[in-house]
Image 1 (cartoon, one colour):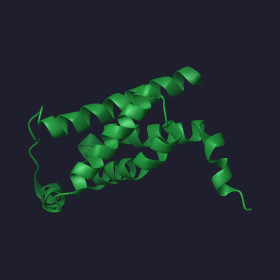
Image 2 (tube, rainbow, N blue to C red; image 1 turned 45 degrees about the horizontal axis):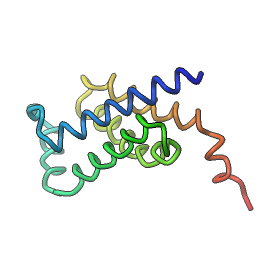
Image 3 (cartoon, rainbow, N blue to C red; image 1 turned 90 degrees about the vertical axis):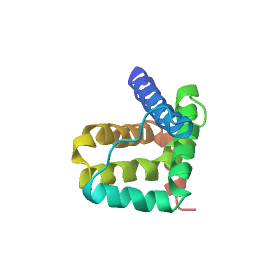
Length: 125
């Protein structure tokens, strides 16, 4: 189980680091968008802060996953981002759904593998 946790954590960390660094340094060309996803993407870009915020969180959580430090916190911080990745791909770009499923369920897997760290949140005092 420990090896699976390290593998999933490392793959997610590398993916988050790659996408965030690629965004900030403009390493790869922007993918061509069409239809409803294009309208959605234009709205995201018009907000001017949302995409850089998400990419910054991805960068910080990617570093956390790679180093293995603060993984419990990083799991919670990145959960809304991974949920949005899943839902955007489910509704607007289903061809990218396999990667979105891996990211979301990888995050859920890491949360359950660190569940002992979250137990105290759900205990009534």
